[in-house]
Length: 437
Image (cartoon, rainbow, N blue to C red; front, side, top):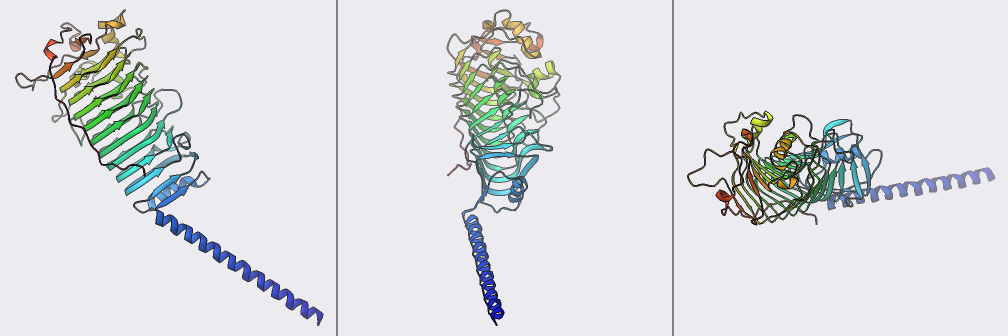
């Protein structure tokens, strides 16, 4: 009888324990469900570094609903392949701060870029760093309303041709805003915006790239308030042939920038277009129309403060091809005014072909003799009678050189008089792109 009583007591305790355990599990599940529902209601998906975060993050980027915020906690996230996001609207990827959330692709084994975005509408990335992808760090294409803000995109090793071409690469898109980003080490352009409409690049620092900022075949762009230092070239406003979406760049404002000491060795891979940019270039305008360059500090760039270059010069000197009937190879309607030019740098030994030709003609052995503004003397044959190819309004001590470079300087001159005129003042650019809350 005593054994029966003990057995009944044991059975009662076991049953009570089971019920208690089961009840706790159900409550925990309810809490998890409530938490997940809260996340879904808030539209925020949170991630921290873990062994599975890369797969988890890529899955989220594929399956998430429009309007989702991807929140990356502080820490270093190590990737071994690229990640992609496409066909989404109103997506934000945010970190805990530029120096706190690090997306590290130095171990990348697969993929052409670190982050690839396609067909996005109102996409925002901010408060993090992306570094050391095998190719471009971040590429966004065919999108509308793109913002990169308060972040960095860098290659951390030596500045050489093994680095990716572009640290930040929005292309074939509309309404692009790049604000307060830090860029370093790209073997083509740190910030490259290509074939896009309505573009603002502002308040950013670019150093140790071949080109700090390049706006290529874009319409209605502004490059304002940036610092470009120790690049090969500070800011490039280019139009290149053979591109499918926008054939010729038009209406770019370049103002209130600091372009200091852009004399870095050109480390572009052989065959790359920017291989032709001479070390010592502040601003270069290539085959682009309606550019206004004003209120910039253009200091200590060894070869040229501002260069006005036609693509025909690259055909003659660098063997580039020009097989595009819709492409206009000449600069036109350029207005350079009210800039602060200064040059106090030694002769640069490590020059590329075009830089060597120019410094040999103007600045050897006295680099201070290099003109502040250099034109390649290529005249647009489609100019209307009396139309000016470009206008200059600068202090009298700003020097000018019409180089006649393709004829080996046979008719070079320093007569700025034909270009002392008032050019086109462009309207400000506005973009419709998302901002952090």
